[in-house]
Length: 64
Image (cartoon, rainbow, N blue to C red):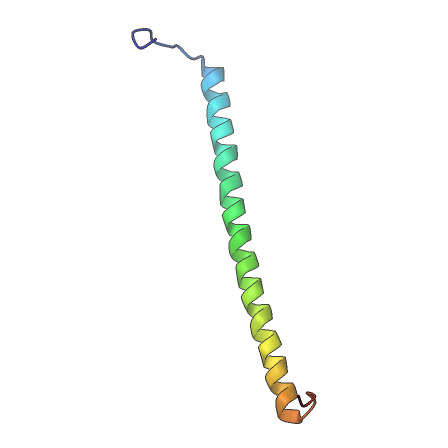
């Protein structure tokens, strides 16, 4: 097959390019989603720590 050249039609090239673009966009959306979830998790953790610190200062946490 190395000595034969494969000829693609314009429609086939367009279909390949379209599919490649879809796959690339899906990967970008996946990475953006992971990044957003990671940032939301950090913010939630910071908020929980802030509430715990505040509750500790006002004496609302039970003594262990």
